[in-house]
Length: 288
Image: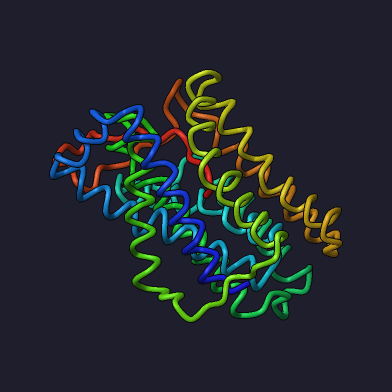
């Protein structure tokens, strides 16, 4: 199935479902966020570069690499977030952050080179989309920090995904793509919509409230391991020892990133539409 069509269908259906939920259960919050000028700026940026960008680059990375490798590379977006925080605060990485950067770099090197530093095991296209997915995941995590402080997570996510869906239809223009009519393809798309977009974000926010940022952040480290295991067991994708070792380093990196220096504070993220420099405490964020 055309990756462009997959992205468009996922975003359009997810936007329709979540917007319906918002209109029925949290109409006042939705009206509040849509009538706030600063929030609208953040909403558009988050929708285009976060929701659409993260979905598009991740799906393209899966199409060229594998789901497991694509997920592992995407999770290295935490390193991009650390680099951004250091740049904005005009400081060098702290010990914990430097440890995470080293672990992530080692993990990615093992996966990309398979232990042979003289060349790449991934194709140039696979590496390109993998790295781009890291950047868009960082955008997905950083851009909504101001919004998440003031509004319900679903009220933020629904219009943002709607913006992302519009961006996907404009930039990807999947009009000529044929949608598979078999039940397996339809079930796969619906499963990816509910299990990949509609359910994970609200569930993560609930876990964040119930268990706290440290435990919730640590649990996100299960995702790349699960993706690698499922693609191996269910799809028969070959996994090398270097892939497994790289996955180990990246999961340890995620654990290091999730452990805060101070209670309830991992790092700070600015608002892109708000005039206040103190808006937005970044705990952790899930992948779409």
